[in-house]
Amino acid sequence: MAIEGNIFNIKHNDLLPEQGRLLISEPLLRDAYFQRSVVLLVEHSEAGSMGFILNKKTDLTVNSFFPELESYEDLPIFVGGPVSANRLFFVHTLGNVIIPDAFPIANNLFFDGDFDALKDYIITGHPVSGKVKFFLGYSGWSEGQLAQEISGDSWAVGNADDEYLFSANGDAFWKRSVNRLGSSYKNWNQFPRDPRLN
Image (cartoon, rainbow, N blue to C red; front, top):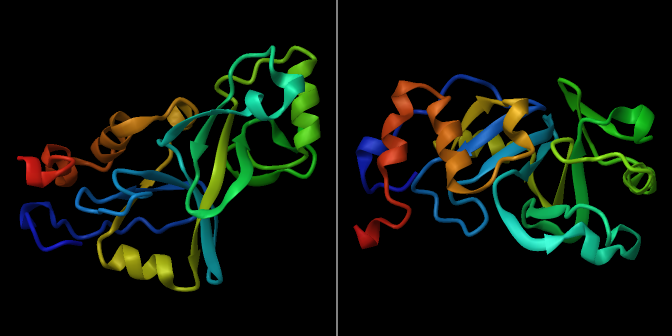
């Protein structure tokens, strides 16, 4: 954590990272991808971790890349992270019966699977709003890297609120996630996005 504004330097909580939990960035993190980000962990083991940034929507839609989906509801794409930034991923609640080969995360939450099955599901008239979220790229950590970043107070670990995962966007979701961490973190929401302008 940066040394400026030590009232914001809160020791990381004791919640351990695991699949289905959130990583909430501390307010001083300046990384272009991770500033005020909330990451859903979809894999976590001793070998490393993988997740998707939930609250950084792009101007792109899935529909613009697949002509067969052009006439259906807009499917926005979010920045998932800096790794494989040209590959499309998705998180969903449809399960591996509707979407074969989907990888279970937790609490009826899955990622990826047969994309053609997802397209067929949409084309046959099934709405996916609130059930599927799309990402370009992912966030990845090598062995021991995430533990080191958490120990360095770059991230607080939180529990996911499934009701908001699919509508999450922008600073408002980061602030909501910070509030759910408890009163010890309330000062995080008072910190300006760019302290140089304060």
